[in-house]
Length: 82
Image (cartoon, helix red, strand yellow):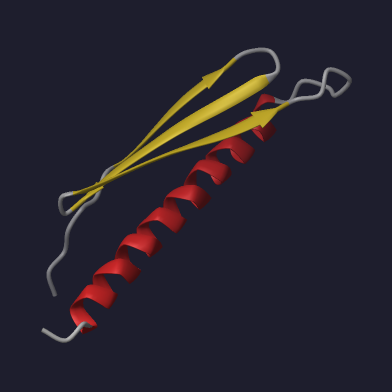
């Protein structure tokens, strides 16, 4: 079994009400980027960890969709008759 390590970069930026996560994954020459955001209502108590978790989850969910679409596209190309 061959093993490989992949690197997923997450960059988090936040202010008093908004958290943004930028996710980047390079996989065998394919480059994927996504963004996730979370916003706190002004009436809610500050709980930064919740905003971070939501923003990360949203960025990763978008990244998952991109990687799945890329894989599906490659499968379809592979199955096309020459």
